[in-house]
Image 1 (cartoon, rainbow, N blue to C red):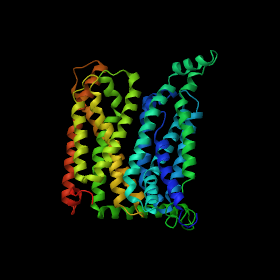
Image 2: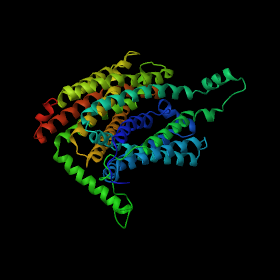
Image 3: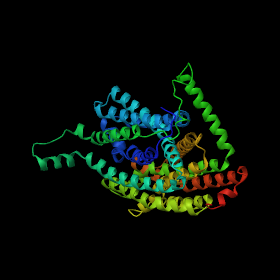
Image 4: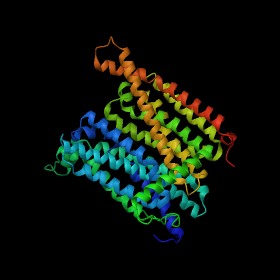
Length: 461
């Protein structure tokens, strides 16, 4: 890649490409049927759990090194790599034979590794490329507007994908629609369960095309390549990436406001995401029919349109600490409400958890991109991704231990279904307690170690 600065038209294309990448990379048609898709392919619940663990570990291990590689060798290279991995992971599921077998598990294992690597490669690099493109145009002040627009498009895409993905998975509905056109038309069930995957494979082609058309916003900083860093090539790249990680870690520790933002995001996101993972069980407990789950998910995605506008107002008009208090109040209200498992209307309290992930992503992205210099941006953003995944992992581990203890205490209940429901309902009481502990800990650490804590209390300049 040459060292000439990209033209303004290329930087503008990067901004459009960033939105397209976020939309098509994240809004996938199989999300509403994620768990049952794995099982219908022929996997067992135990294998499903193992695959999710592999996926999480892959992200944790690759998150920060991938951000360092983006800072060293260019954001575009990492985004092209991520888009290629997305295509591979979808192609694997499109063509693997359905039915329980060792081959099926190994292919899904490869799929989860590719998916984790793609998530890690994209994390940080996409935002860094977009923000550096804005900086190249002298329009950094528009970052909040770009994030708001991206969130709106992503919410609309999630709404569409949640409904279409669920409908395309219903073999009776699909074949019924085909018979309306021609009575002899009918697709086999083993093909129909692949339809959400096939649709996502098609969108992965859009992602590949989008990233290929992007331009590196800082070609001088990204002029190195893994082959040109020394005689050892790949090993030299690895050494450079870890040196970049250490350099960025030192920079982050010396910029305590950035560290405070990352830790605050961890506290909010880890609790919210842990509940979202369990949301389908919560819906069942409050007597919502399974057929409505997809529509609820679509409705939750539309709330992102409102959340984006609220987040833009908060980051541009209010102080970071005020915003932390607002987000904490929203989440705490939801966590307290779900404890009562109110039939049907209890779904309203789940909005707090679903809203939190989008609002945390928006606000942490705004503050981090504003504070971090270009040389460390992708790496520091990957620190945020690492922190969020570690936070979720810790929350999941604690929740698993809590469930085991609650089950041990219910020795008088013989009915497994009743035991599971009672244990789940009792576990919901721990969510607000754990969240209060995290918020108190983050606040105390901020006041103790953040010398300029007043920066969190000041509004935008």
